[in-house]
Length: 251
Image: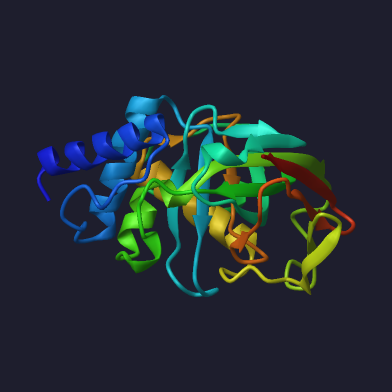
């Protein structure tokens, strides 16, 4: 894919985001994940320095994929969003890590100990999911990934302790909508340990995306899948023993 094609796709996605509309794929489907990331980088460069990153994987051994969290798209909980400003009201309960020390661009990835030592805090978060792409379910998966992984916002809840030694496979999670639990389980992150995903993301960004800076946050994939709710919903993501964060969708 030529740079002109990447620029054109990124411009169309940005325009759709600004106008609050959905569009069909604005060009040929990216041929590989590197082209997808080039589109993401062009969008992020125009929108401003990213607030952080999202990362996930389909299995505990699969290579993860990622996307920037665009500038001004990370907010503290509780938070509220206008339903009419969105095309779908998607939510995911996640665990995220905020960096207290920068990991600058380098030719090789930092080891796991270096990555974890750079983390200042771990948080319960909820991702708000929306897309600029029409009929996204029928598209090649590269398209939703190019659309910043369909991120609308990340709602950050309280920090919790013991994140290095937590048994993530046994950690309970509950997603409540209007007071009713619609998902309740132990574990549930398809990518396995969030620390594996965090370490991969840090290495990828350090080598290929300009490095991580202090203050950025990395969210590490849904524990409850992608759940859709209706306008006026009050949503709570609970990680018992760790904390919770909340959001609401107004009419």
